[in-house]
Image (cartoon, rainbow, N blue to C red; front, side, top):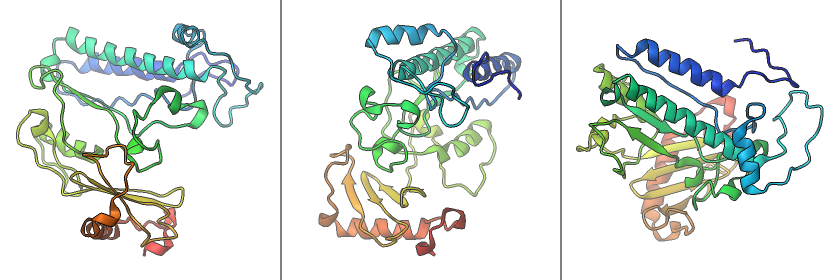
Amino acid sequence: MSLPNTNTSQTVYAAQLIHDKAREFIQKNSRQPFFLFLSYTLPHAALQLPANDSLLAYYVKAFEEKPVPVATGWQGKGYQPQAYPHAAYAAMVGRLDQYVGEVRKQVDALGIADNTLILFASDNGPHKEGGNDPSFFNSSAGLKGIKRDLYEGGLRTPFIAWWPGTIQAGRQSEFAGAFWDLLPTFAELAGVKAPQATDGISIVPELKNSSQKNHEYLYWEFHEQGGKQAVRIDNWKGIRLNAMTHADGPIELYNLQSDPAEQHNVAAAHPDVIARIADIMKKNMLKMTIFLFPQMH
């Protein structure tokens, strides 16, 4: 899609355009089953808002934020500089809240709320790029790490499910899942067979507050910053850093039930758990040469 925006004149706000197109889709398909993946880019880097945005002005005043020096003559490379990074971030969150609220109200107004499941989630923890300041907002909520970390602050994210008449308002879940659970979940809801080539499991029982199958374990890997691996087994969380150069390097171990902020490494006291996690890491490492993990062949 070609937009009229330039470096000096940005008349179309992409998030608003995405939102408007999504609402058009809901309106057109409201009398038949539909699936909508609505991927807002708020908040994110760069910190950008519509021109003369009222929310930005509100938060600049609320935070009493002083402008930071920004380079003039931005040529479109890298993130666009933002003079009021804290206010801009808050305004982007506020705009996201407004958009989600409008979608929910639209579903209500169309009379399809009781037959519509809305899931709200984030793809990762907070990040520092483009002027973001997660410490100012306590964005990790006391958890360790941010985006690109495999500690809980980088992995554990909001996941909210809204389904009137099926999900009781205010109910909380202790189920530990991941995004790869969504494909089999949607397949079950649609009444079709899920693909076999997935590690995901349907969370429809959890949504309906019935007996839910749990994962034997969850596994993550990250191919930057020296390479990282993480495994979760029940309440145990194992993390290996510098995996590119130390394929058999030490594994940190945390009990997330008693230590969700991952402050106390208890690896030395649980060699049996470490051995099991090391085996899972070895078996699941994705051997993709594009990520250059030569030590893990």
